[in-house]
Amino acid sequence: MRKDTIKSQRNEGLKILLSLYMFKIGLAEDDIKIGGLIKAGLEESGYEVDIFANGSEALFRFQENSYDLLILDVMIPGINGIALCKELRKTNTTIPILMLTALGSIDDKVSGLNAGADDYLLKPFHFKELLARLEALLRRGIGPTKQPQLLTFADLTMDLQSKIVQRGGIEIELTAKEYDLLELFLKNPNRLLSRQYIAESVWDISFDTGTNVIDVYINFLRKKMERGNSSRLLHTKIGMGYILKES
Image 1 (cartoon, rainbow, N blue to C red):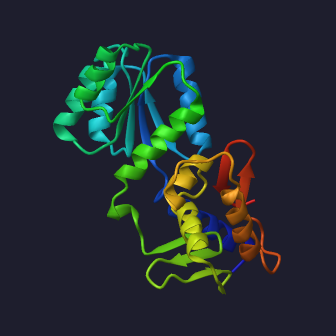
Image 2 (cartoon, rainbow, N blue to C red; image 1 turned 90 degrees about the horizontal axis):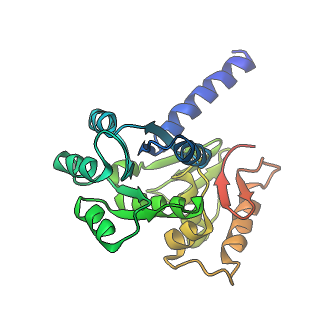
């Protein structure tokens, strides 16, 4: 078999594998600029995003398609965000919903939460905060269907039952924390993970800017994964976090 054919088949297999882990987000936002920035930022972080500028269309699309999380702008035309949230909760009580609004009163926030929203973010906001909120909501909502027994990325594999990790068929010996850290990345391939998200997921603590424990363990993992001149898979995004991707 020709090398280019093998490479093509390998790439297709990788695409199928990644689709199993990519979170799909539905965004109801009529502001073209804000919606475009959110969509671009989330897609860069490894999410798949569908955006709708009308509440009525969003309601139809959200009910017809499967999403892992929804972001709803309160002041959207057609059906506003509050009414949209109420309608969605009639048929889906589990999907995480984040409300976006420029309305900052306590009554506005209570209205959104009473409509069934899980979280509430005021405009204007920093994208890092939006990303952290989404990560927290998705972490709470991850169910057993998103937990396969064999995690694979490039030539790296992790068997969740035997706890054996291999790269290129060669076993890698990991400590308990190194294993937990690598498992987190393998469950979120091609997705930028913030330091706060890593700290909360692996160490179950809030991120402390005075500690370099995450950097230390990332370096431990890299050294073990890159033995034998293997290519780098764990990459640093300065000031943003880390991502598991092929060079």
